[in-house]
Length: 221
Image (cartoon, one colour):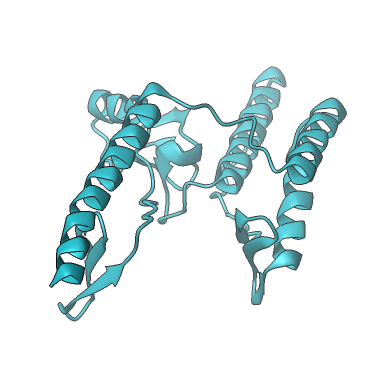
């Protein structure tokens, strides 16, 4: 657990309660995200519980308790602690769509019983993350990869899951352009970033100006 952050690093507390210092000029915060406010609104209106991230606790068939016609999928639902990743959303969406389609067909055919809902089963296809050029991590089952091989795997899998040939082609060309030119044209520079960078530069210049007289005085002595 991070307990303190400053300009030169951060302090963390381990599980045994001991605190230690990590010196770092660049800190990256990656603590997850909160669910959509719609989840909390659904919970309040139906009396359903939510977790600390605002995700709705759903039944085994991904429906709200007491409301079998309301499905909640993706990173707005919490079922058995599943992570809020794309595969959970994709598989949950397909599961809900198949249930709805099956029950609609049963309703259209008079005399056919409503099919029993099997609980949602998530198939973990692994996880991966790209850190920088030629650097990535991937874990598929017991297989763990790092470096250029994991980086190539990340690129290929993300291309496969992009919908439409034109979108895949446009993404591939954009990646090739970024790879050859070392540019990040898809990033937007906001006013807050400009103000923050300017403040950091002024702080560095101020610290440098303070260091010069002290060095000169020490040399004179």
